[in-house]
Image 1 (spheres, rainbow, N blue to C red):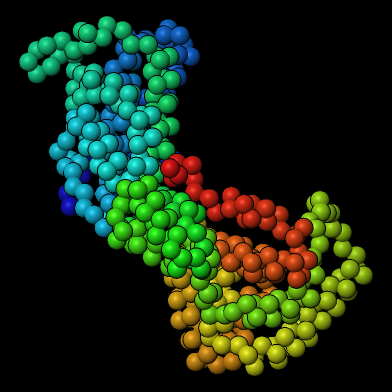
Image 2 (image 1 turned 30 degrees about the vertical axis):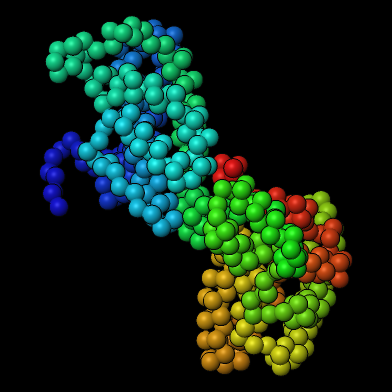
Length: 440
């Protein structure tokens, strides 16, 4: 590694003025691009604020447009780098010379073509930003026009443009940045989405969700009419019988999608009766769960309140002993892992595929506790049992996984409907919906 020794590009006092570069922060294309775009926007705003008097439009047009153009080049190279990760997650390969290419037109054409071939969800965002990127490519494809007054063959630049309006630049660049930010969000989402494996050659994840809604209940698939349904779906999606079967297999093995065809998958590690047994003991210990949330309260503790609190703590300890007397006789590593998984899955409910991976991790940990002895098992059990939001999280997980009947049974059994502020959003699936940019 080369060691620089100079008095210009180095750290100094004051400390706040030291920028982190290189491995000290590890910036990438996105970070560099944001720096150039912010510089362009600061200059644009200064010029407009002074109406061209304090900062001349004729002088500042070149650094402004160069920073804009270079930012876009970096954003597109960063988008290709992200697209390569999406492609890898989908089991494909994508190669592009990010270092050797500076022609925005070529860079954009490559991204547009490859992204839309990979997933049609890119098309709408690409169309929104295409015209402005094409404008940049037409005026300054390789980044030389706003750097120098003449080309390498002594031709004066910008003779066909004549004038550039700063107010127009501000509007168009803001629109482009918004579109590029959406593109970045879609890249990040799709990389994670394809990593889950819920797709086939012809069906993306949202398409599988749509297909599941169109399929009749699995109990009817043995009827002769199901053949006509399959032929209709093959025509609609332009796929053969084998590809449709692959898509259906994905649906049958997916926790939420399988529930849409009337074939819900069993919970990991526990069954309905065990979960109800858990809450039969938990709810009496947490009576507040049956009350409707009220406005913010102001608490003022008196000596009597303190004594009552201590008494409640003592009662809870005694009650906990009775709880453990019961569960110590019936608990297993699978049940312990299952209850932990349902509780913690609520925090990462974006992808139901995570449920299975989380369970395997929790099961390994629970099995270790059983090897270490009862005290560790007890501690792990009460780690969830003592959570005041145990019912919230577990019921939310059940909705996410498509176990709607069991979730509704728990809500009705313990009379907690009014206490769950997120319930209607879970029932409507709004709580688990794709972001707008990730939908078809």
